[in-house]
Image 1 (cartoon, helix red, strand yellow):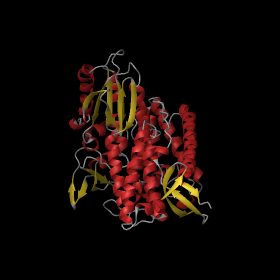
Image 2 (image 1 turned 60 degrees about the vertical axis):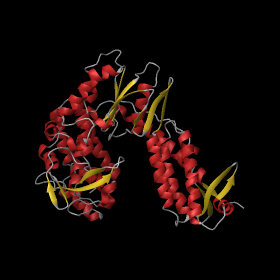
Image 3 (image 1 turned 180 degrees about the vertical axis):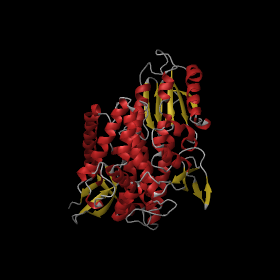
Length: 499
């Protein structure tokens, strides 16, 4: 059986997992998703339901759903049954489990992860079969969510990122006559409090299966607990359901404000949002009541501790950055709280690597520094990067002294540093894949050039053929930038031993 004719093939005709052409599988799934999106644009809801049924019963979609489950970060985290799909045979046999008839979700396994504020975030971990079923139905639901999404919603959406949300904040606030007041807020326990009644009445999918996911409960310390509200954090389909719950908020706000002079803009990333306005009175009298009422219909409330009204000259933190106007110039910088948190993490990492070989230590430290710097390189971050490099330098001095307690500063400098031009560089000798010696240098984040992000067009969607060329150009541009970064980082951190 070839990979080119599995779109509507029965699950009994299963191909060999290791010989599947995944590009063809994705192409077939994507073609059906495009048809669903077209039916949504034309408001042919009967056709939407028919195409959803066709997609969720196709072998191609089932293969793609299983592939998503066995390749994501949670692939080694079992549910309450303790089962994992690590072999090709188990993965291909899992296709037979993805059947609507007789399907009944199992309870979730409760786990906790720490939050940035010191509290614990509860997770509900489904079994592998339940995850695959959620991934399967998410394929049929995602085109509908994309076509009905708010223009300025950026979280958990294809082809969108935090950088796009920050870019929209800049466009909304950067001009001389831009709004001066910002209402920033967060939805309290968004995933845990969404009304089941609202979801069952408004999410266009099989109601029996959706009800099973919502009402399956969870096990904690061998005790069963029923779920009366919310969609579990840890489920593949949960971010999609949360997004669909909050979509429509932007239109509800626009409907109650005057067309001129209000300067109301909304930017939302998942359950974090800001709303701008020309005056605090307009935000309090018009916008906030609409938001509160919109959320109340869905069983949600605002987090009072994360809600505040501020002036742009005072600045505010949003998605890890600080946004503030200095005079008439808007500056977006890394949030001081996030910088302190990152430096604390780096300090603890360096302390834990006293016995590690220096070349391995530099590679791991470079990976952390590079990842953090690349996430902030699109904002005003040059001075922050220089400060991070300064702190890392002092952390390394303590690391060297702790590692070599009986050595002098001159010996440490000669052993760990070399002169390149006007700079002293922390380095170690390493062996590359060709067996040649080379010097491996510590990355300095201030060397990474600032590159502004090009924000995605608000109305663009990957399921509309009219935007296909647009997304191809963006993908090509990102690939060119990625190759340029790779060459630059190689130049910064690697140099062959000479002499």
